[in-house]
Image 1 (tube, rainbow, N blue to C red):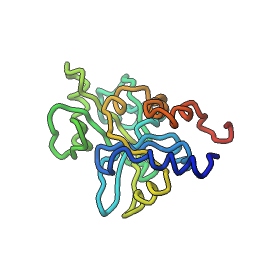
Image 2 (tube, helix red, strand yellow):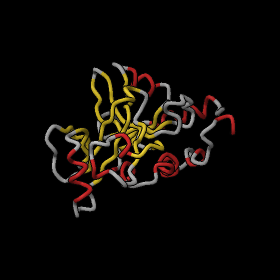
Image 3 (cartoon, rainbow, N blue to C red):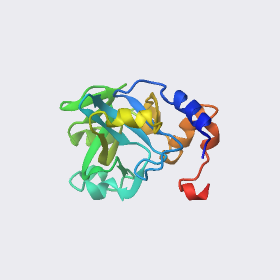
Image 4 (cartoon, rainbow, N blue to C red):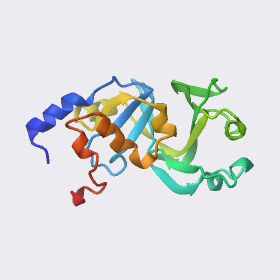
Length: 200
């Protein structure tokens, strides 16, 4: 475990961006909660009532066509379902990266939207626009009033402006480590740490 002085020094470095939608919550190396260890959460909503986001780097082994059999175009596609967090895990929600705001959706940041009609999946998969993307999540990550702020005070999270490429294009297994490396010292040394803290 890091010395108290070292922990205080790291805590000062953690908040790189204020809490708000379009921010990444990057699990600090010290965060041991199995729901969030080595995760990157895209914050989609933040207010006095609480916060909501999706873990962007935990794909499941389940194909999206198994979860959404009512959408024929997904048959044979390699898209998988992601685990968005521990809340309402029986509910599927979709993040889209599109050029135009879809009806009934919630703009998060930089052309990234939450929700909307599942018909958008068909539009993206048949479109010649190679920049449009989607990711589907089972469940979400949620915090009550003041809960996330308390976790920030305890040094659980590093906050950074979100990057669409890390949500939709980067290998999910590399996202957390890639962000830590980009932060330089003293974070780079943690990028290779095993998921299981007992292996340290």
